[in-house]
Amino acid sequence: MRILLSAVLMIICTVARADDNNALEREVEQVVATMLEEFKTALTTAMKEDGPAAAVGVCRDVAPGIYLDLALDRGWRVTRVGTRVRNPLFGTPDAWEQAGLAEFRQRQADGETLESMTRNETVREPGGRYYRHLRALGTQPVCTTCHGPRDEIAPDIRAMLDEQYPHDRAVGYAAGDLRGAVSVKVPLAD
Ligand code: HEC
Image (cartoon, rainbow, N blue to C red; front, side):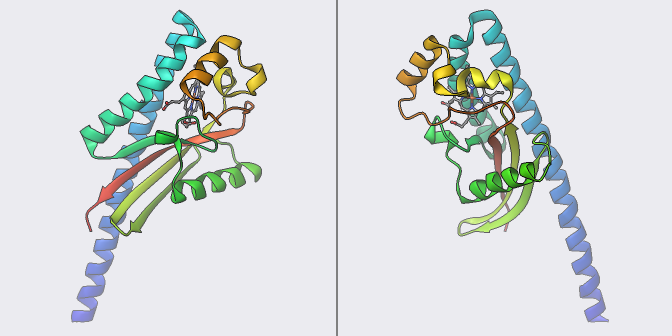
């Protein structure tokens, strides 16, 4: 009887935990979608109104502003990581993110489209449990303005990038390439 009860309890707990994770997954996906939308609007408005050189400032200032707001509002770590990186502070993938990017590359090679490609996992690290979410970012034609082959980037943008990001490695991308991913890390109770 006792064994049966604990088995039932275990099943209930597992189902409850799965439900919690599904709710969290939906919340995270929603926040990422809003963030990408906000970012896209800021980028296209700046590109249209002030030109691509001014939009470099949007990428430099708007993105970290959004990461900081999400960190303080929700207690999550949110950032964009790259397969090659322009700003190492925010863009360098950790081990889990590197494995995720490698998985995305493989899935793309196997015929899956990058759009809405994600990886979700609950992990245990030395410091505790985390829910992790990675969402692929493909290179769209507009992205090549600042991430395309170095010698195809307009001279004024190249000059700005060289000045602000002297260690820039995030160039040489063609439309359709995997550029990186949005990464979210949510601390969980033990
Ligand atoms: C106007 C220039 C510009 C355009 C257009 C642009 N980016 Fe960037 N991108 C930047 C800059 C500048 C950074 C570094 C931001 C920072 O300092 O955190 C960056 C950083 C990134 C990063 C973070 C990893 C890294 O390399 O530091 C990703 C991912 C990224 N861009 C993806 C994209 C995608 C996808 C597009 C197209 C939808 C795009 N970018 C369009 C200028 C641009």
